[in-house]
Image 1: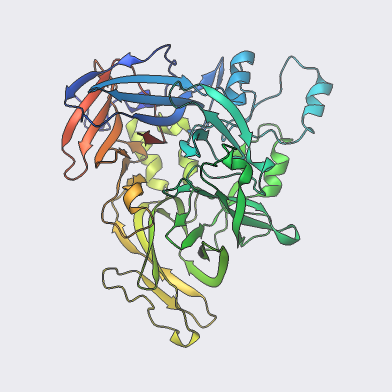
Image 2: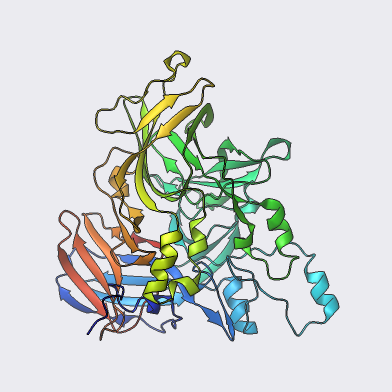
Length: 502
């Protein structure tokens, strides 16, 4: 008999367990009918190695990057996976220990080195991880597996071979870039990251990478900064996971979750420190909303503010009748949600998982609206006149405009996260539907997906304990009815993001 206290997804701990890569693609067992036009690949990234030798990784974002691929051909499906040969992975496997400090795991000095070489290794500078476990996206004709540092890793999407490590700092003024760029129909890529601005003050740069070049040169070499957003604190940039882009504007949400740069720079000389030690919250800041024109890039110096939220994923951003509408997966308050994503928490028994989630920030899907035409004489009244939303924007006496959102979805400890829209058709435009992953007290138990071009949803489902413990599920995007599934006889660990490559 199943305990009434068990999580509905059953053996959820299995998705946080190490698995082996495959030497060749596995044929999947298909139920239903794979659409005949489906001829591409579903690519996904996530952690696949959760310990090295006797040394465990401690945080959800520490496990070494594993790339997954479901291939579709003639109604048949195969599954393949391979570890990305990053420096972090190769050195860990070679030395049988954690060599490069990850998000929540400190890399201790090599015990075989003497005291003097260990001492001097502290002063060689910060060794930033290239563990690209978060997402994969195209740049020109190439594909890159990425995390949120300055390193991106070029991969072959057909063989999953690792091709080369690229340091974005060699091309633009940026300390790191997000794993969530915006990509236009011609292949132009936009991204954001923090940087050193004017007068040794931190700022945030929007970067543009052009599409495929006629001379076949690398588009990354022609990367340019489009526009710069100011930082509310000189040496403490906000954590940035994604940004919004409509047809003509960028939207940047500056949350109260901060990276203490002085802590960050000194962390590598303090025994046991990692990236997570460098985060703190500015409890009095609230949330600041910035906008800029896209072409030509120009920061619009209006002050928009709201109650404190944590935020990782923008859903969509569009313009309508003189307003910018943007939808977010928000977490209420100023506390950093990643504090609740330690693997020990996620692997705990279900009652402990629930107890921890009760103390965490609460998730909400929110819609905010920014007015583009603002006049000082309109103090005290709601500047939003769109008929279909309850979101408001009210100007205060000091010229600051206070934003209150419309709540699109809210369920106690039930998050709608990792959102997907039909991006090729509706990215940056007024839209109706979004799809995502249901998190039940931080544990996934509903779907996340990638779109095909003809409105089918593709998602990987973990079913630990079954004869075939994982499968690819194809759903009709209109009514979420099952079209087909392709089951494989191996566990698939948690994945974060990915893409459908046609």
